[in-house]
Amino acid sequence: MRPDTLLYPTPKGLFCEAGGFYVDPVQPVERALITHGHADHARSGHTHVMATRQTLEIMAIRYGAEFCGTAQEAVLGETQSIGDVRVSFHPAGHCLGSAQIAVEAGGTRIVVSGDYKRRRDLTCLPFEPVPCDVFITEATFGLPVFHHPDDRGEVGKLLTSLRQFPERAHLVGAYALGKAQRVIALLREAGYHEPIYIHGALAKLCDYYVSQGIDLGELRPATIKAGEKATFAGAVVIGPPSAFADKWARRFPDPVSIFASGWMLVRQRARQRGVELPMIISDHCDWAELTDTIREIRPSEVWVTHGREEALVRWCELEGIRARPLHLVGYDDEGE
Image (cartoon, rainbow, N blue to C red; front, side, top):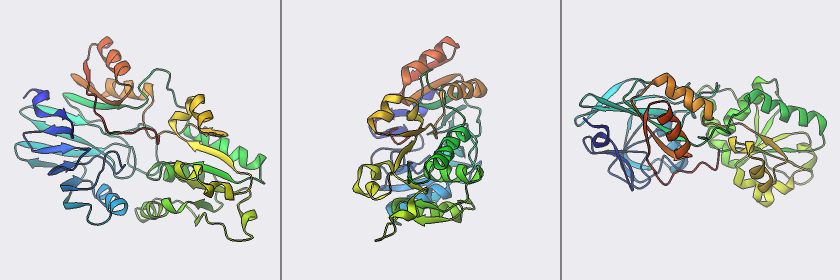
């Protein structure tokens, strides 16, 4: 079967006509296969959803128990048939429960990677390379300029600031699913065992990570009562980036503004956000990791989506690999 008849882009998302399903659709559909729980990939309102158990449970936390009509768990590594198509889910290393989806029919296998990373992460399973004819890769940081530093060095910058400014609260903006928990785990691994204060928007997801065996240490709510402002001097406070534009952030003592994101490599973005201490920590691949992954998998063809598509397509062509951009819309990378 030709790859572009097995899976092709539509306004609702990638569609497999032979199986009657979409992958990460951006609008409600009859049957959806979901790679992971981030809001731009996992939306509510589908009639039937297939995803890993952890992704289904994360969707229930974020959208409520009735987020879809019926839900079906996909066990990692197991192949299931949907019509004439065989599908299987494989770890993507992006966040807890994240998976790549292999779609196979007529002797052709396409792997939809969703979002993925190759860095070590204590909070989720590592990426698993899956042999395929067509590899669909994101390109969030798909430009040669993006080379992310070691995560532990970035956490070290925060620990140094805590020692230098013990009178100031250190407010870390981090995406609520995956990034926040990863930053906490990195801090714990680096030997920081003080209580970490979290915004209420993070509480349920942090509790879920703990229920899945991820050790996040002591977490406390980041609420300030009368006369308790001094409690947060020298403390680490983590919340979603949106909270830092709110008066909530101004309640803390002389706060150090921090943002954990791959985009902090771009100084202009840090300045625009008023970030005092940028932490370059991404849950996506940088340029070298994207290209190394393609070399490792060695697909016959690469389709590139949501990000800097043209540069990665051009790199593939120079490597003798057929490639094309998919130009999918509806996927956001600003939280990274």
